Image (cartoon, rainbow, N blue to C red; front, side, top):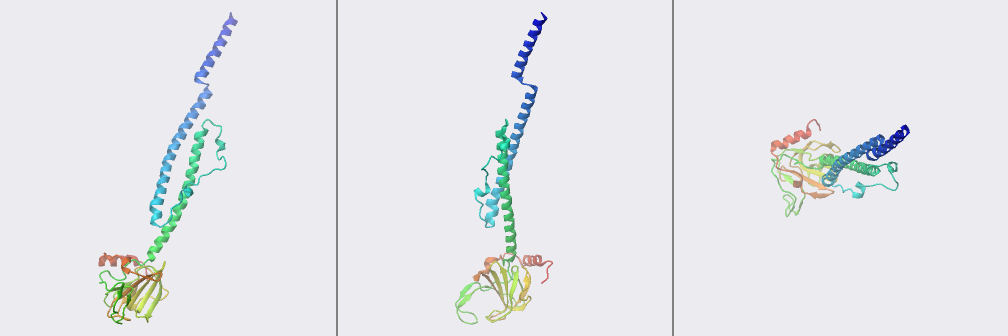
Length: 293
């Protein structure tokens, strides 16, 4: 009787154990299942974060291509360079054989792609920063302010003279005249180096020529006094001369000329004359504060 009871008990125990394991699994299996579920959840959340990060990368890319590069006259980066990709070998073979291999490989792939894109973007921003620094330097050298107070009345500009007021011949007038009273202060219109300062036998009288680099030179002629010497480095807003009536001239004025790679430019295209006199001299004061010439 006892043997029968024991046999039945063992059989029932085996049956119940089998049924329990088939329905609920072993405690170890349940623990692994929970870990797997947690892992999938973490990867799902990580991929959402990767989505947000990718949006940020694309925003940086858009700013790069639409704002910074066009403004700085830089060429766009080809898409093949921005998304270089990778391949040739199984880079993630260490992730094979796991229940979540697929999602793990997908996540790792996205991370590698984003890493490559960020490295390219970082290099792009470095080149943009360097270009911006060069543009900032170039901007300070360009002749971009009026050489005398904006209250000074304009005289003749760039034009073909049928009759020169002194010589009586026909010829081009390649600069902009300012009807400045004798002794009016003349300022450098951009950073540069003085390459001529003295007397000009061609009709300019006392004159100053500044080489601004980037192909630009400016000429200031018919001066009564010169405050700089040949070879001197000057900054925009520095006092360089006083207006006069030297050379071939009918009266006190400043002849101001801009040349770009030897081609004459219209100086009126290089500065705004909508400043008040106070604003103009405030600008000169700010440009020259803390400097001596």
